[in-house]
Every structure is written in C-alpha cells, then in structure tokens.
Image (tube, one colour):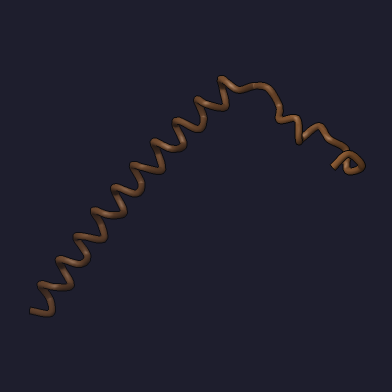
Length: 52
C-alpha cells in the first residue's frame, strides 16, 4: 500500500513538473516575441534619479 501510494505520488509530481515546464517554455516564448515587437524603452528607464 505504501509503495503504491509513493509511486502514484511520484508519477503525479512528475506530470505536474512536466506541465509546469511546458507552461514556462510557453511563457518564455511569448515574452521573447513580445519584447521583439516592443523595442521602445520604458520612459521610466530614462529618468534620472533627480526626476524620480
């Protein structure tokens, strides 16, 4: 019983990690492509400390 539960838990965690990895890959892909289209720097990055 204990071995079966541990095996099922390990399998569930492996599936969860694979799904998380896929989500992170998709997020990174979208983030990379969004930054390709938005080449304009943020106005906040151009402020001097005196302006902030």
